[in-house]
Image (cartoon, rainbow, N blue to C red; front, side):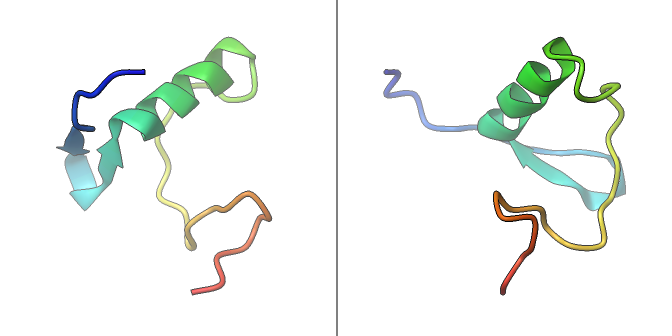
Length: 53
């Protein structure tokens, strides 16, 4: 496992993503689960499907 600190990137529209976000999206894209487009969601997705903040 890498000891390199995780990078954070600010995208257009004020979206902030991390290396882990990008890697997870790449894996979903390769599996055919998404088209690779970024979308602003009304709530933050979680494993359970709901953000309970």
